Length: 332
Image (tube, rainbow, N blue to C red; front, side, top):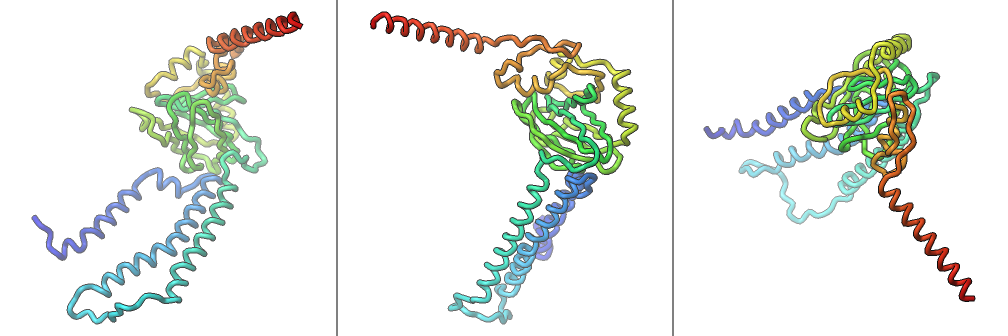
């Protein structure tokens, strides 16, 4: 059935409002506007400031567009003035050039200031010592290792409140993105690279964490829980994990790194230098081929075929050079 002219007039605005309602229902978007840490709070302020500055330009333009369409509509009774030879207005030129330029300058200044203040690897000022957590994105799960505490987890993070957390990020799978919306913005995890991200939870509670990048069949299942608690409860949790959980061995990690989903897991220990081994395993460095036993001690690095070939080539070149030098002296 064809829409009447009156119904068609309201169809576009209603569709636009429906789209806004559906978008506002996105959980992650609402979490961003409900920060629970200093980094997320600073990012929220930047979003609001940028939106207001952009709105100063956008809202008047939308209103003027609607007004002009209505004012100069094609109607017999329209009494709008007709000026076919009009071409210039100094006042209007100043308005539609001057105001946007001033707003762009203000937006640039605010963005530059907050971008420096919220630089991901910049430590958070605090009286408490930062806790390091090494996050590795896998197919399709997250591995978290605590180098200072000597424990590891899968799809679960426990942190003390009001304590800076230094996340070291890498990937042993396709590139992904580490994101805890209520604590701060996302940062990519990439193979062969270690990125640094400082976050902090100002309140106790459970926070949603996720991989915010397409990475294959089960990328939507790469979610993890962040539990912020008191210092005493965090220390008790670490002690309990070390006493009750099983250790993560090298063989166990190799199985964990295979494509597949995983539930929450806790480990009382993990191979020493595991994170650095993951970071360097694709670079061809000797450290990438070190084998780590369950005791945490690393075995001597094994020489790769490429390294052996390069070494043989270098030795052969040295022998040729030495032979040429000998022949040169013999000729003299």
